[in-house]
Length: 281
Image (tube, rainbow, N blue to C red; front, side):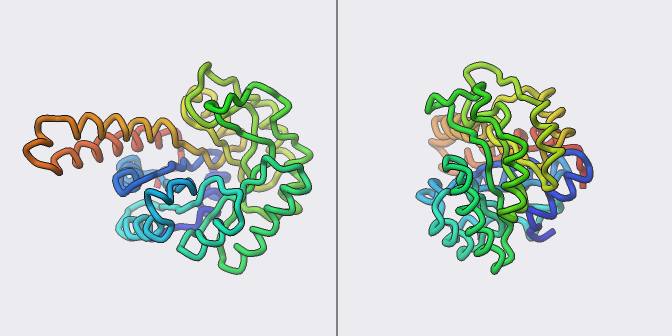
């Protein structure tokens, strides 16, 4: 299959009351594992790049790698730019081949967030690119963000207003998650999610997926989450596998011997994680 529109993947997940899982990648091995793991699991997958990672992998090269592997894949693959709060950077990503982008104005006051996100939607529409916005705020564990503070959660009325006025294809919402590895297991406010889902008629996105208990995820997917982001635990696994491979005796004999083992471990992780999505292909 060729690259699929992220919007189409999320719309299909919404009909099936499940979530497509999106993984942040940082190099060719992690991209490769996302797509090969999806083929093993027979599930769709979205491959994302965090803007700061362009220092490791340029927008153009990343998009080209995903598209090249997607052409030979037997499952749908989406391409997405993760959290970005800078309009110029978003435009550069669109120019370099990204077919879906996230306009993150969640740290701004509501009206400014709406104005920023709407401006991205208007530009992206010209190039037939999907846009994800965010209302409420999902912060970083490392930055001391209190993910149990209900004051940071998404308000259903504001989410409905945001979706209507911006024209986004999907919206990330906050109801008890956080980026990074949790210090204590989160307790998602599923009642709030249900209320948001009743007021918003586009797919909802859950950020901060590393470490949320499986039972809570399964409930969230049934209750309106159609895109689920995973980054930190995937990156940590990649670092662990690389460390083990590059310090092995075998690598001293054959410099590239560890690549296959790294890819194998990453691919197995992706295939297992994707079982959370009940939409097989």
